[in-house]
Image (cartoon, rainbow, N blue to C red; front, side, top):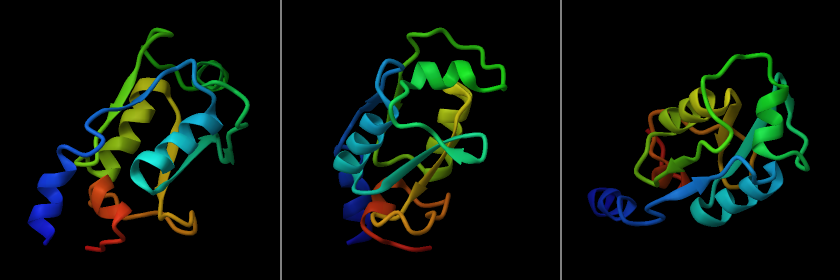
Length: 122
C-alpha cells in the first residue's frame, strides 16, 4: 500500500500555494485542511502572531532573504518534510515545523508530507 500511497501523493493537493499576503493563521488552517498535518510558523523561537501576513512576518525577521514581496511558495504531498521546511526558510526567511495532526510532535524530515499525514514512520 505504501507505493500506491506515494503515487497518489503526486496527484493529491498537487499545488498547495502559500501567498505572502495570507495571514499566518490562514496558511496554517489551509495546510491542515490540505494535508491533515499541523504547520507551526515561528518568528525566532516563538510561534508567529497568527494575525500577521507572511509578508509582514518576513519583514520582521532579522534574516536577509533575497525575495520580492509577491513570491509564492508551492508545496506538494510528495515533498519531503525537510525540503518543505527549507523552502519556507529560503523563500520567506521563516522557520516552520511540520507536526503530526494533533500538533504534539514534529514529524521526521525524511518522510513526505503525505506519509506524515497518514501517520507513517520511518
